[in-house]
Length: 200
Image (cartoon, rainbow, N blue to C red):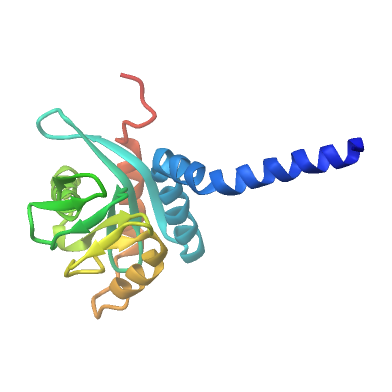
């Protein structure tokens, strides 16, 4: 048996193992890094549309606790509050439910409604920076492999692949655009009180 043949057999074996293992490795990495992956998608959208974006916004609440928002995006008509969410099971729940049912292969469990979490963050942020709640839109982002069942609002719980579509839906509403000059000041002020890069 020639050395070349042995090498080819080994390479073929490695290729087969990697092909089989790749989906598992991909899911593992995605599960660990989903916030970074979502952040990159939101960043690309913001850059393409010339929107202002603050990733991982950390503010001190009125009760001295910390409010952490995954992404805050200032578009033409609304300010979007994103909550990142990852799920590997069937997801049952409506936008007004307090909790969602996760149906996995081996067990079922309940989680807090990610849409309501985004709405709660929106409300708190609005209070902290003294901007009207009507200027904000809450969006819970979820991975594309999650199987969402019977959810009633596809624009509040959004597959990451449908992010552009959801923003297009809101930005097409017949509402007055945000004042761009005031928005720039708001972005600057929020950036100044962002605790993310500040040491305790």
